[in-house]
Length: 151
Image (cartoon, rainbow, N blue to C red; front, side, top):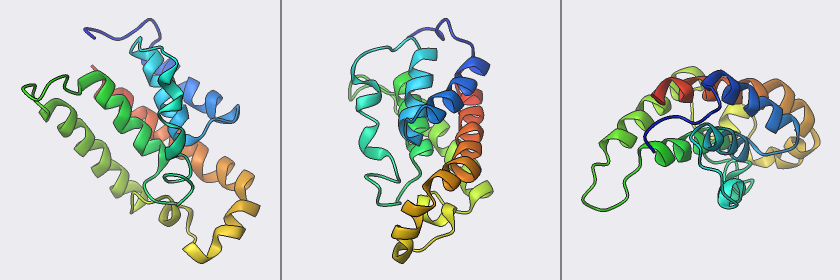
């Protein structure tokens, strides 16, 4: 991939919120939107991102939006062979993770939501509120950081 696709970065950020509002998970949303920006449109996306929703199969581990951003970085800067350099993807991933932890205090979904593992039923019950007040703004923020990393 030599350049960015037909869609602009601002459009990719906005598409993230639309995809999320249409029912995609955090990870699917970010990877799908930015794969289109990078002109990587294939049936494997968003399939590859599906198990990462809800903090990796709803286990509330690493935030899905962050996982999707890291996958998108891999699409753009990842290596194709063991002889290729990993630094272009690694440095960008590191910067996004640092920004994420600085803003949210953790990369784990459950920590960001402010719940404990014992609260899983409550999380399920509050899902729409959580999506609207926590996840949607977080996705937009991650998408903005990701757009900065894609040149």
